[in-house]
Image 1 (cartoon, helix red, strand yellow):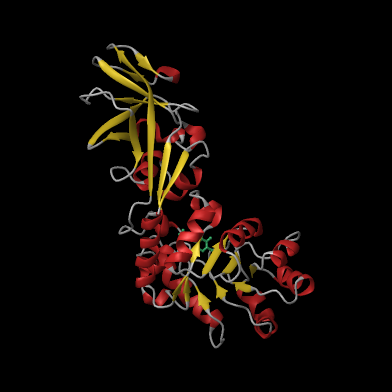
Image 2: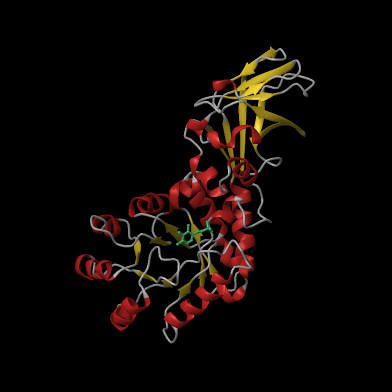
Length: 344
Ligand SMILES: *Cc1c(COP(=O)(O)O)cnc(C)c1O
């Protein structure tokens, strides 16, 4: 077998949900958009439901249908893109709850799915999705009479606790929701870590569940081991990979590993990433190819069968740093060629 092995620790995922839930003053939901941050939405949802999650969030209605299929009737499934043209049948068929973000969406919702539950999305300053204060002022009384399941907004800078945007958005959200008797939701992972003032009635963590920053205490969820396809000796002055970007300075043992940028090992990580054999780190050398990367294993006593690129020694955030990106992008880029194992 020459595909990488992606191991997803569902008990660590559940432990991360419980740890975040213990921090929250209100209820804790779970964000499972983008196929559960790339880890497999059905397995992820079932593990989170077993841990106690009852409210799930996806980006689009199609994802919501997959979550409903995995969980069955009962749990709330919120669609954060709201109610778009073409969504009505899916929302109805799978009992999905759109987070309405514009007056147009509100009109569409009451017209096409009048008995379907919904939530309201407010813009508290991020300028991405949600009703602006003046739109909300116009819609507020009518919308509240229809009994929305929640009013939510999203923080732009919550991964930086010192950013003054956090307090500004908190103030705007409080002003926009003052005096209404509807559950409120503001915090994602970063917002949970900011403190109780940001928690309100329901938190919506995503990345922290999957072991990513800013939840530094998270347990590692993902391990990725890459099989060694070939090992060769490279003499000083010889090069490895496309465009000759790496030249051996000493007699070197080079291992060729079975994964590349088509599997989510993005080219930008270049040779700043490492692979590990036990405790020993081996530098990635040369360009990342579509299906292959090379590592300098001169330091190893024996030829390994596989090397680890994600795991206890190199987190998704370490790999992200090597690539100049975030853990979110590393996780959601993980390809579908890996053999996936779920640890219960
Ligand atoms: C993605 C997303 C979340 C989850 O954010 P994390 O930073 O992954 O915890 C919560 N709310 C909204 C609106 C989102 O788009």
